[in-house]
Image (cartoon, rainbow, N blue to C red; front, side, top):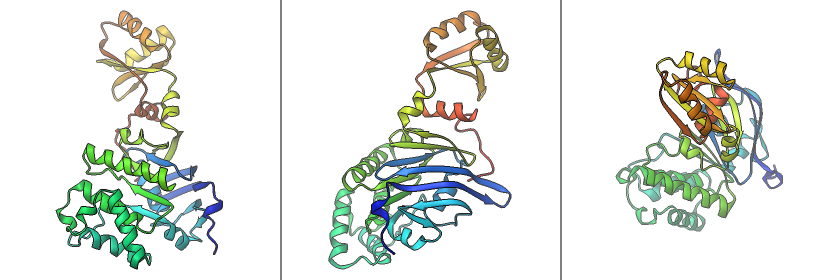
Length: 319
């Protein structure tokens, strides 16, 4: 079969994707295209459907209903062609702790038929890029979490995939290690044109992506760049602490004819002229207002607007 990747403008195409665990639906009519050469993030709380989607895209579980095309090849028909061209870094560690950094990478390379001079050159280049060249002969059990994650990335990239899939890549990393990880991913995108797709439940991490798809209970509720998603809020956000949030929200709606709702026990509203409304609300309802805050829109605000509940509200029924 010829390599169809050179003629494909998108790294991933998903159409009408649904997935069930018995009677529970984990993915609902998912449709999207991920462009070649972008960093794309699936953002959602635990239970949003990210894990199931990652398993489908990484060919770990079959596509039950719908169509999935990866690098121009279709699942499940071209599953072997797809596996040759993708790199996968799982959330759970996959290193053999008793092997050295070099041995772990070589073991992965053998699975893809990479050896000899080609392996030595690629391995040296990757370890230098990831800052682990001086650790080649150290057992991975002696490394910090951040260094182990770099070894995982080297394993995932040793066969030079066109698409890199990462499941919650920042799990267990401190802020410095997370920053280093993102610098490498951006360099990989810019220098090699690799498409990078990851899942995360970290709002600040998603801010770094080129585009974000927000998942909630298996449904994609928003898709755009971080800036466009925040701009879709239509103004700054006002959050009010009150002992009677429901009645206060109703009173604000009735008196001022503006949208005010209750999310997570707090009154919340957005308005293009939000700063002016802070004073009006406090003046009109000083007894009911315990505290009031004004903030620029965040990705959590986008999530709340699209779903009606907070990002960290407990989810059930999907994975």
